[in-house]
Length: 374
Image (cartoon, rainbow, N blue to C red; front, top):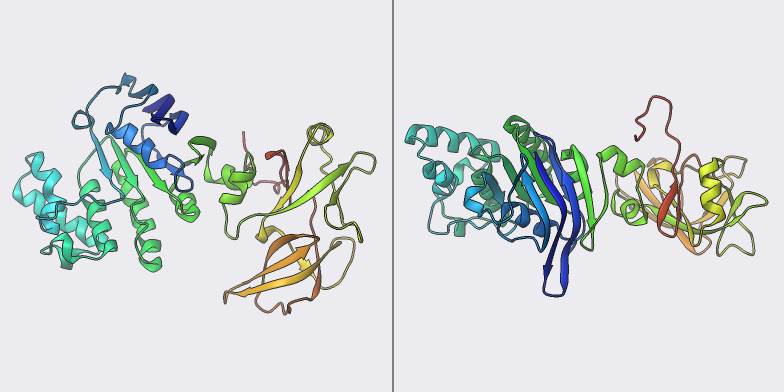
């Protein structure tokens, strides 16, 4: 089990990681997810031992790793910049960790070719890295890291430079390979699809701090704050600035004073208590959770004006103006609309998230039988 206890890393006056707490199981795929500069790669380097923490402790199976050099940690890392041996062939790059552990030539040949077949780089085994594309070099680096057995695999953006079709295929291959390893995987990415598809557990970082930890389902359906809600999902979550009227128990959308748009507020005791003392309120809605109609009725009561229509073939993404805010909605391609059309949206506690001063205070109720957070 890998454990990080209030680990902090500073470079001069810059804090790269702030009081990070993490505890993994014996075999778990953990994805560290966040924007550039969030502290993702620094976290991997701390675990690998290439940098030492400013404060806090890193343990593996109960034993402290603070001060233990990288070569004495049974860990394998894929670096974002590949770090391949330029004078060696692809075959020898992948074989290098096996030769260092005195595997026989026959075993090395079998393991290298098996890995090359999975990564679709078998035809490049005789080439040197300088004659490969960025995506091909990335696969070589991934093969070199995964070809040997390790206690912990540290993967820094391992498939980010692949084209979309190959990246989609490699996501499945990577998860299958790592499942066979029965080891701890720490995988860094800024791609939410990759994070959701691969992880047993996600850690969302921003500005060196942990925003939320949980399963992919928890992160997506129950975001802890506005950052997590906006960063996880495509299209990103849309937000409406609102004010709360405790007498009517309704939320008024700002920027709609001429023709006020009101939403029903959540009716749970916890939500009402949070609303009573709330500062800045925002309603967040996912594009896939909002339905639209060309007519106004009790369910479709929020007027909007079509602003942009993005045609994607299997679906359209409609951006509509509600007051001064923009809301994105996913529609079927046969639902015909034009820019400046008036449409009606169903937005209510059944499909919106409510945030007070950036923190979540209410989420849509899931259907009976669906997963609920602990």
